[in-house]
Image 1 (cartoon, one colour):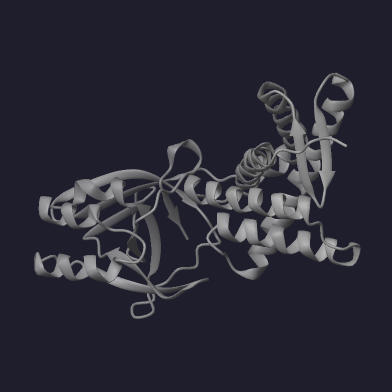
Image 2 (cartoon, rainbow, N blue to C red; image 1 turned 120 degrees about the horizontal axis):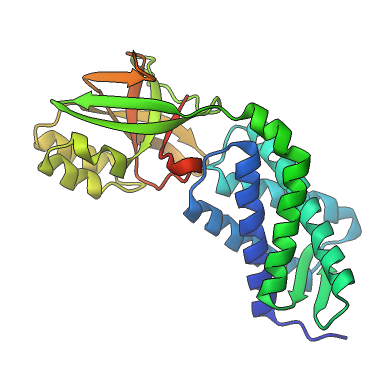
Length: 287
């Protein structure tokens, strides 16, 4: 009977879940926030501790793991529509299976000290961090061989976006994401979502001071402050999010907007209060 340390159990699964979600985002071409990935990984680590010491019954094991998979992907990827959530969960499952194979193959080949245990769907591996990173790299290479061709074919070139407002302009790269269906219900215009820091050059010092304070949950208050500053180019776009009834997104009416050099009047510019972590340094999402 091996002694199992809760801190090692939690940390191992936290690290692995973060890595698996990060790889899932890469192969799914899905934008993600590192903070949300970390929160989802922490949830996975907590669930791993619970299921290791209190494993579900044989009849409930599969439904429990399926719900855990949906919960982790939902938290990591901002609770997308159910169909998209299922797609992400299946990719996450494939990534998990590949990683699990790499872990046990590494443990078998190494034949050295270290404990590998799997109970209740939770992995406990008391080995040096370097070996864990090696198994992670092996799993990543395996997934690249399996999914690399398809992901390359599905990857699109980033769009070059220029936004003009009040005599100022800013240029940035944006990711085309067909899963972004956000629309302003009044004007029916599409809403691209841009990390707030990327838009600072468009704002006056007073407006920038307000936008810097923008966080999840205080959008209406920031909008009121902008109105008192005389900034009437902003509006609020309602959207639905799990756990956030009546959520609001601050949006900007640009004076002009170019997408890949072509003028476009179909977009509003949504100001994201959270970090948007995308490949190649992109910080914006086009629908």
